[in-house]
Amino acid sequence: MASRRVPLALVLLAALSLACAGSIRAQTTASVATATWRATPASVLKTALRAAAAAQARYRAEHGTYAADARQLAFRAESGIRVDVLGAGAGGWQGKATHMNQPGRSCVVFVGALDGAESPRTDGDREMAGEEGIPLCDRMR
Image 1 (cartoon, rainbow, N blue to C red):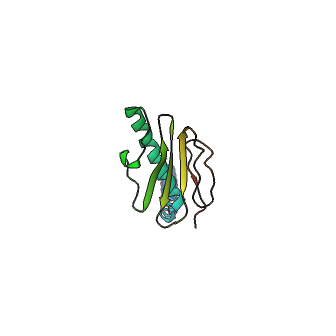
Image 2: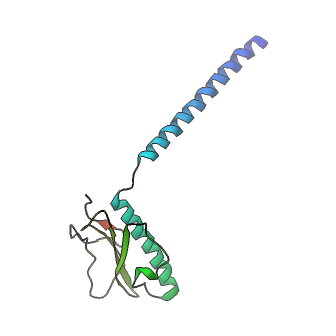
Image 3: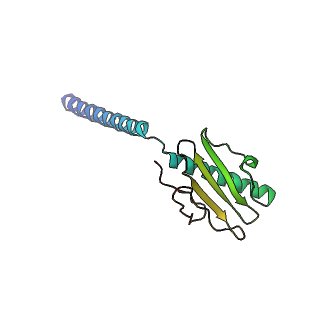
């Protein structure tokens, strides 16, 4: 009986070793894929506008209106990124983000509505933001 247990133990040990090796290989592949991903200017600008939208929501909850100036908001964009509030009131706000390495290009967003104002347009392609809370960007170079 002992002779049957040894081969079974070896088979189990070998299977466990292969499973661990496969897991390590999968983790290494995922790490390499993650390490090679680079943020694009558009993705950085969209992230900044989403952060501004979250800060605007907090500001409105406290003050009953949206902030008219990005400096009033409790968030800071990354270096080289500028976020501007194009217009704001009790019913909504519009914002624009620009990247120092993408002159003439921008991303825009709006939440709610401003009396007498159409949705914001990007600087380069002049595209109009169409969905509330969803940043829209120019084609970046």
